[in-house]
Length: 232
Image 1 (tube, rainbow, N blue to C red):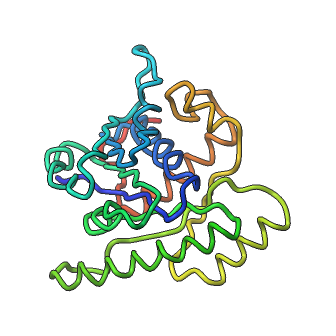
Image 2 (image 1 turned 135 degrees about the vertical axis):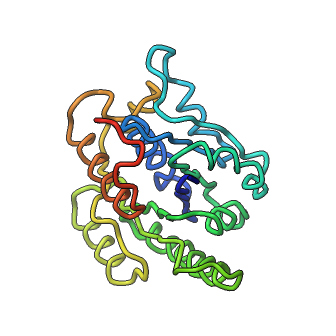
């Protein structure tokens, strides 16, 4: 059975695409899903994150840089898709790259991380438009359904009137759904990069609970149920 593909993309750099990708991929991996991260960003942040892990405690998902292949990376992924339950594609930040477009033509779910500040909200509209173009393109080539599914993921959420106002603007103007669960601004998330792990590796915390709830919501969207899952 072919794995489910999740494309994580947005116009903006620094909106948390790699953090979202690695925290989710590692969480699903620790739950027993055969999980793969395809690192398509030339900065190779996801790959470097995985390399930080120790031999005794490897990162709980396979991480592979395929950025040099650019939009042709999908031609090399057939074996990966067949051998894994979940494939997360960490896309580069610029939509002038053809990588996000290629990912949208193949994925089951597109996640658009967005920080609740206005430059992120403005830029996210371009990512939203690309989703609708990809849906039209997939229909024209004869695919059934409305796919790919797509949703905003609110990231680096903080308290304050500015953030609340920007989030309200996103809610009012978004043509795509916004995930119920979000990722807050917490020190434990960058600490995960330092040690090559996911937040739950540090034990119970509200950050770990956030990622678990988010993974549960995404699992429901993908219809994963209990495929390949172990006890967390």
